[in-house]
Amino acid sequence: MSDAMPLSSDSIPVGDVRDRLIIGLDVPSPDEARAIVKRIGDAGTFYKIGYQLAYAGGFEIARELIAEGKKVFMDLKLHDIGNTVEEGVRSVAKLGATFLTVHAYPQTMSAAVAGKAGSNLKILAVTVLTSYSDQDLVEAGYAPVSTDELVAKRAGQARDLGIDGIVCAATEAAKVRAIVGPNLAIVTPGIRPAGSSADDQKRIVTPGDAIRAGASHLVVARPIVKAADPRAAAQAIVKEMAAALA
Ligand code: C5P
Image 1 (tube, protein in one colour):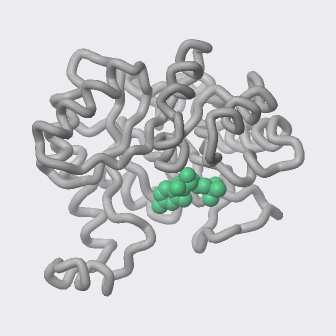
Image 2 (cartoon, helix red, strand yellow):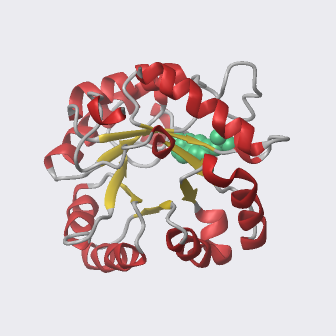
């Protein structure tokens, strides 16, 4: 059904609504990751591995998930000199991952696009970290620029350099969608089903509203991983996404 959706693209894997829900494996050990994946079963098809698990055996988990037919998002937020980024991306492509994040600096994005050539890996650009304020940018040495302006500028550069998608807050999704057009993925964290705890997220959006704002994929961790019944939690979110897509 999602094949007919305006946000789907031949290059982005969204053939099944479950493939639009990326479950964040924000756990400290491979055994905890295996246990949660087992509990979720076929309700989860796409998992995100970030710093915490990546540096604690996460590549082994990525290989296991891919061997089981699951999709894997390596949230490694790469940024280095071009040659190093290109070779690192090539290694992640060989692993068989579906998504990989890089910071949205033009050199880094160009190198990542070169490194994934010939593979099925899709590169997502992180424009400006959502923990940064305008003042944080000044502290980091940028000439006065608002985070909004920098997000817009970097989203346009990502589109022009052949990046496959953007990671942004759901509250920014509509603006980013207008810049990048219909074919790039827009991947949004900060998702909370109505009635669930916000945890430390400041600007939360429900799964349905994120899809309606233009997100193609949602990243959800604690509302699933910490739920009493993670499988039921994932199923409820997929149901809400499917309703928003219908
Ligand atoms: O538990 P929760 O659903 O809030 O987790 C969201 C996931 O998305 C975490 O892995 C977090 O690191 C990631 N993320 C985020 N906000 C961003 C970028 C990534 O919450 N701006």
